[in-house]
Image 1: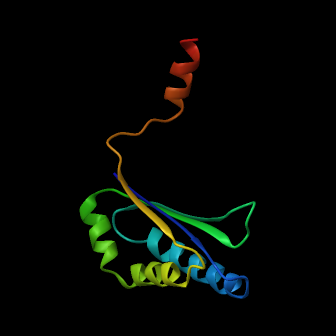
Image 2 (image 1 turned 60 degrees about the vertical axis):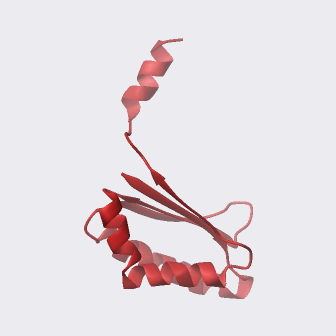
Length: 108
């Protein structure tokens, strides 16, 4: 699994346009082959700061996405950012759910 996280900052007068772009982007990205999840959120302390995250089944799926029209929208959001955007890609070798919480809490 591969994860992507982007943090960027919109100009106050562009905030609604950014929200509309993210809404469209999330919907289209979730429908893409290999997409395991896609989310967008607004920072509670700075309502002009956004976080956009994706999870992909494989590096090949992410690579295909980075060549898509949808990814051009992500690049556009990065270019519009009022401050230096931060983007990170992470390879995730394994994931856990509630069983990990239960295991750790039992070990106390």
